[in-house]
Amino acid sequence: MKTLLIATRNQKKKRELQNILTDLDIKVITLEEIDIDVPEIEEDGETFEENAIKKARVTADFTGYVCLADDSGLMVDALEGKPGVYSARFAGEKATDEENNQKLLTFMQGIEEEKRTAKFVCVIAICTPRGEVRTVKGECKGKIALEPRGDKGFGYDPLFIPDGFDLTFAELPEEVKNKISHRGRALREIVPVIRGLMSRYE
Image (cartoon, rainbow, N blue to C red):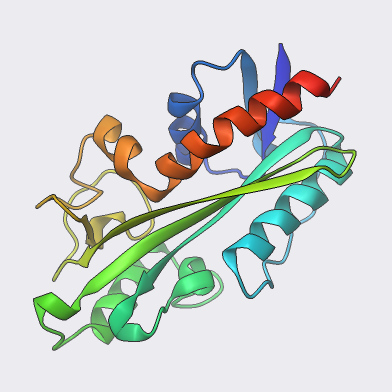
């Protein structure tokens, strides 16, 4: 069985990815499961694409594995696309999910419901040690809730209500979220790309 390394230590992300990649005969591992100490990669790109490609390329080159990396974020219309590529560190470099959510709510105070529109964006990059790179993009539109709701998921999930639903990502069953989420959509796009690259890579 061939191995695909995900450039993350986030076990929730691994589980989310595994649930969608179940049809592929590929072993999925994270940075926590290898003996190679991969250095921290600075996400200094101006776009999700730049960050995802950099993480995938550096990790693949450093470890020798075919590597998948994603960069995701929330873009709020009333905030001119913020927090965007700074989503994970909106409230500071070592900010918790709760701190980022609270800062977003502070910025959104007084903004009426019809103007709380937003979208989640995910770019997934896959890179081989030979330097082959492919990317796909997934989006999910919705709006920002008035307060955090739900205890599933991570990041801004407690604040994001996807279009067509009354529940936040953090309230939806995992299988429903995986079908409609930005990451789920990007993953379905990357599956044939993974299959093609893995079939050629020894």
